[in-house]
Image 1: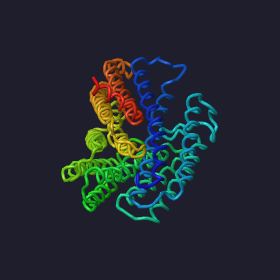
Image 2: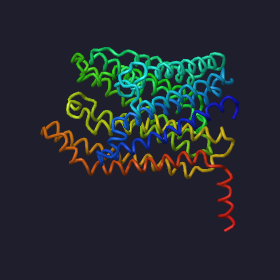
Image 3: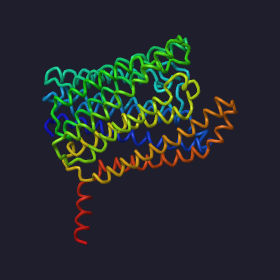
Image 4: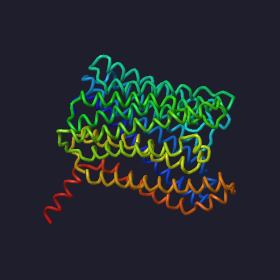
Length: 454
């Protein structure tokens, strides 16, 4: 470890992995409620479980992004983080806010209270006091990272990372604007949700991938920077107007059907470029890096993101198709694979690369880590296929034949069972991953010695 302040990332990664565990367990519980709808219905209703599942996903991914920034920026800028104290204060604020959200959601505290109670807007249900805390933490982060970069070396990786993180934080300010007109509300709501995951987050993902491939493959920085700028250009060109594919049926003018269809079709390009970039860098690479697990996660992130966000997104993005498939299990299939490929996997890649460095030990438990990769990726792929088939049947029975919704849900019961089984694989893989990062070195050495003695 070249810079002492990189240790800040260790605590962010620990917090991220803890909330990651909560998130996948919440998803497993939500999946079981699809199989057995009355399970825990009075103690923990489905709407609460789903809120915890989706919100914890957002929180731990953001913690992972922040940790990645605190780890890679010192190396890229060639200087220590501006203020470690502010970085730890930011983490405390985020964790207190997260705890407040969990308690508020679980026990349905302060219903109807505009400041303390939850709001009814998906992904941004957080009470206003938590949103204010998020903004304060985000501003602390931006100040800290920006000052570090401004005083140090500027690279394409830090430039793109800062662009993505500044955009991420500024777009979140729309969470405070809640107009009474529902169509207007949904339009600005998508400014956050879509322009995060298909805009600014793509920039963060691309910069983290570029950093990892620079370290793992040994390819010249100039080559990686050229690819990075191409990816950024295509992501912003397609992603901003691609938001229109969410405007089809919410009351906005009809021209959004064409704008959304055309530009969201182009959103496949940056993900294809990212996947091509990753494999070309490995092919051109001159370095045989010992951390094979980190390289596996990096390549996996680019590949699964292309299929989840690119291919599965394209499957139902054209307005003529989306008219029938909107809000069915096909949407769930796309959402799960896209989030896992693009953002979960890239976070797990940087954690896999950074943790051995932060803890001062070799990446000795790579086999366990790679087993977790295949368990999670395989489970998520199977879940996507299951939900795609379920959504196709649901679309035909519900939107074409006009059959009763609840009867259709009964007809999809077998698919929900298979979805839960695939979710169980993901949870087992997640637990193995966390164990692989935190297992003490002496335990592995002891087992190795025993096997040699035998």
